[in-house]
Length: 363
Image (tube, rainbow, N blue to C red; front, side, top):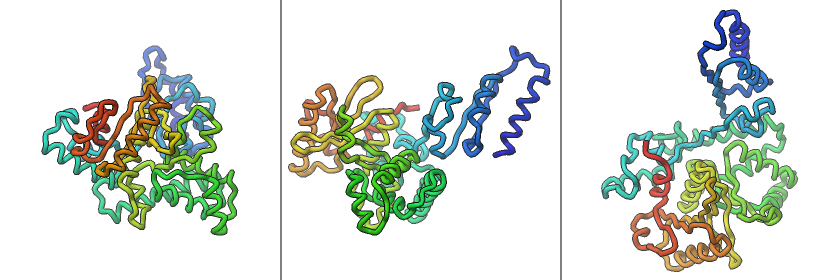
């Protein structure tokens, strides 16, 4: 990497001697990968951008490339793009099976194939290198990803010495998707196991795991900062495959995997996401505020065959809509047959995969 930067500096230094007026110079593009490993790279690029006709794309797998981490010399001159694991449409495109029509126009055979692939997507996730691997190799690969992130992006960078506590925290987050996690309770559990870790350290670790794109923490949806900070956050892995890679007991709940997929898509759509808890104690999985000002209350469920479950999920939506009257009420299900039986006048009901495919353009 040092040689690469030296070569670029040498090239820039020689540009004026080429005898070509900048008026006629052609704009060129540079692509620099993992440049964050070189100290002072932002100041160097700022000088190049100010003096040369060049477009620069910088890529890397480190949280150090987040916009808030970039040196002030590049702020206002850069646009951040986050590359996430495959969406469901990208998963299908990778297999050469992307539907050519909208989800509503699928034939019976096409819908059957899409439903089969969606269940595979819930298991395999969207990491490109994990596609098509046997379960054992996929688990080994994904656990290796997590270990790399822990050591390279967190332990080494932040000089964390409480390695055992951090590993325990990661396992708790990945094995309990959609779980409401209280730092106070985790602190008590760690202390009971003999780990000397403070509450402030746990809060900091959560922030590092989020910045490293291992987890997403969904807060209570409220305008009160005090209520948001005093209530537990729901923790989701960045990809459903991580759930299966760390759920050694085989306790994975398909509904939690569905929630993880929906949250990932909401983040792709740049929504501000929280969860809602009604005054009666009923919970709506997501309250999403979009950039265009629209709001949605989204309830995700894998099985509504039980009348008790059906009443609980719909009551949660009704009560949450009293607090958020502008929000569209949406119910996302796993099974297409159940959507046909759940036609409701004030609630948009569809399968998760239809919602995923409708939200992305057909290329």
